[in-house]
Length: 132
Ligand code: HEM
Image 1 (cartoon, helix red, strand yellow):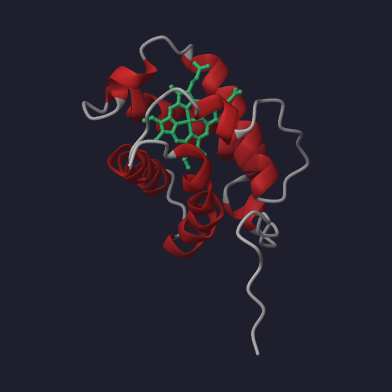
Image 2 (cartoon, rainbow, N blue to C red; image 1 turned 135 degrees about the horizontal axis):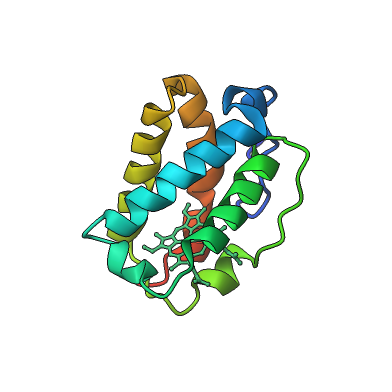
């Protein structure tokens, strides 16, 4: 019998993912390009119009570092509080994931490693998508 973890439990950081992302420098490059792609995306870019890109990059870099098992601390808010009033739907969420995939491709991150990061982010849809 397999044990399914409760939905709220964060998945354990997969070993080696932090290294596969290129450690701190690689994550910084990834997040830098990712946020540039987000703000330029006509589907969701407008939702970032009042956001300071540098601050968002810093929080995302911390978050990806922690998720991938790196030696970091995340200082931002919870996904639920941060996105509470944004009326984010599934299409918005998927658009963001698509831009993250493009950014990971651009960094030369292997497909299997991309999927490991995406698998850690996917369960966050429960806290981020508030418009159904
Ligand atoms: C897996 C999906 C997502 C993750 C992991 C994520 C992660 C984050 C993080 C870490 C922050 C910074 C929080 C802080 O500094 O306190 C943030 C802020 C933000 N997110 Fe997301 N997010 C996701 C999806 C989305 C989507 C789909 C949208 C809208 C299309 C969105 C819009 C925003 C905006 C506008 C901010 C900035 C808020 C501000 O200016 O203070 N996010 N997100």
